[in-house]
Image (cartoon, rainbow, N blue to C red; front, side, top):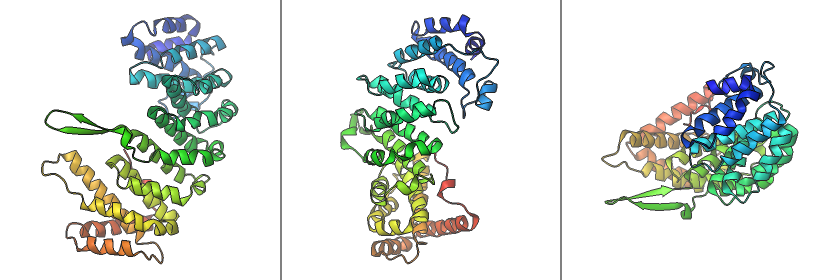
Length: 380
């Protein structure tokens, strides 16, 4: 931080030192890149970051900070791209953020380079491009908007990349674009949505078993990608201008799968189903026969006798989320679904589950009277 602050005040004298040292000592790469990040932050002023200068607070270039030359920007980009293949995740994350902020600072130089790397044969460069895009979509007008609009189809198109890490980075970038610049995404959604829905499915080729001696452990390499994809869908549903573009059939089909997925995915599935029950009750009512089976399966799940506190807490979260979905569905006007009625009757006969359904009805009722909804739920 101190080196970055000094370099920001006198880039001509200190930036060459940072450029020369990065890569010379692997142990210092992360710290040196953080210093470079501080230089860029003082120039560009990043909204949503910890203010480190007047620029970071106002979102404008700090007039007291000497501007980086085009040569400095190009040198920084070349350096960052050379570090994009680092084995250290922290380094790759700082590289992506710096590239994104340089695009805000000097779009004519940085945006074409980032877009070009989206088509690179190297996975690391495509990942850097997708990750950088996440930091360019900010919620205020910038000088990069025109260049970004031209590059958006290429950058967001990485959602269909062959590498799952690149796809996840693109899903996070799309979430950022939906939240901060919905107008830019509007025309691209028809082509992006089918690809996004495809990322929500569980893929057996991404699930592997690791032998740990006396027992085996299942590792789902696609979990983080599915989580990012459902986060993106949830962000889309919260957007007044983009939510109407989501067709109910593929969305609810994705939810059916999500309700029978891992804990991290079920959390978003419950929230999304609650939101849809409020905003599209007729569509949810039509899909209820398919939704009932995974909801019932959640209530049928049992904890192991040696379950640790985290497992107990997650189990409680799942039961509460499923109960809220049921309580919300009960409010659908003129609801007629034999599967739902049968499932609810069985649940209400269960001495352990019936109180949860009752409590969920009280919560949903309180939300309705207090104006709360699923948007208010926190997701870690």
